[in-house]
Image (cartoon, rainbow, N blue to C red; front, side, top):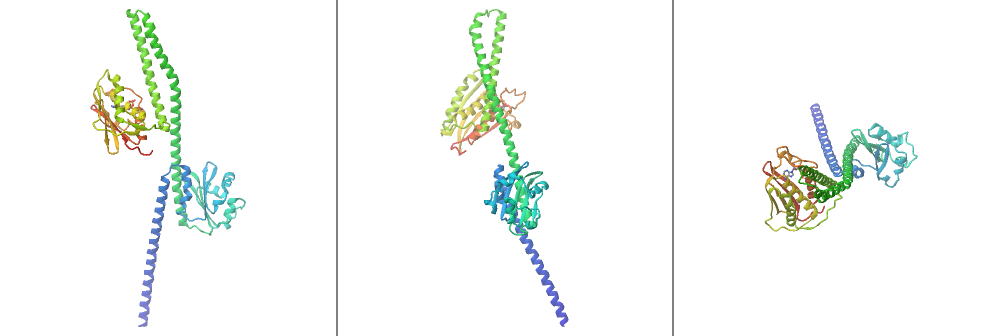
Length: 451
Ligand code: ADP
């Protein structure tokens, strides 16, 4: 009887122990999952912070601000690296009052940091008191004297090391493997952010170089070209007024020669003008890209501007079977904009419409739509192919084929229009059907947003 009782007792005890073990195991698992979720959320949060900046210094500055979310420290130091130059970026915690900048500048790199850079792997010392090679002869080493745990993580992406993050703790063995893995994962996210910021900076520098080059070259070309056009005009005037009058233009030979000289002078002048407008467009676009072409804001009446542009176009359409009409059916509010720039856009769109329309009608309209005024210039010209629409607002994009026999231009007009409209907070777009015509529209906010 007693034997049976003891047997059952042991079985119950055994079951109880197994159940307890299972419960503890499940609890640990749940806790670990919770921790890992929390960590992932923190990593996502910090990734978002880094995504929001494309500035290298800003990214570096944010490292220590955020690393404490993944690992606790008594002191943290971030150091950037540019070739073999090291620069102290920030100290947090107990190192905040110490001037460590000279340490990183002069000695360039302590042996421990150098070791991390050379091996491109994190380095962890559980107990600094047992690290026999530490010499306490600098401020940095003095700091180490008060610490026991040291973790150095390289800011590395692919093969590029952008610096290191130094984490120090008072306690011996302060950072277990999981903590170290968390911090390493965070720092590798920082490295990606720094790499992106560097690539962005390179692109910006290259773009600036190109813009500076364009602006200088265009400027240098404009001066001699003005002389060429001016002298060609003078020669033409003199030729018409003095030389033609002295010649016997009734004679066949003289008449032919005079016609030939006249034609050639006209070519010099028209090509000169074309080159001059190309240079002006180039200067315009490089200034717009540099942001030099500041807007000169004022109250403008867009209907009046369109009307003035239509009057200006009269001499150009005289030889064509086209009509340019204004269609504004409602009263439009005045808006705040740069009148000259908006006029430049309308001139560009109307002259394109005239250029690409052989016969028919060009209708210029404006209306209020929600918070914007929409201006449209529609024509009955050659039209634009669906696949070409995405190119025409890009710089130097001239589209078309031999069938449409499009006249030559600079391919910059629409890119300039897009730029001008966008700095006003609006948009520009086109609807078109090949052979039937095009409808270019742009919107301008009635109340100008803060830019
Ligand atoms: P361009 O000085 O060559 O006219 P734009 O930037 O003003 O440069 O125009 C780019 C291209 O868009 C033109 O070469 C032409 O192919 C097309 N395009 C512009 N406006 C029209 C239009 N109204 N009708 C047909 N094609 C047009």
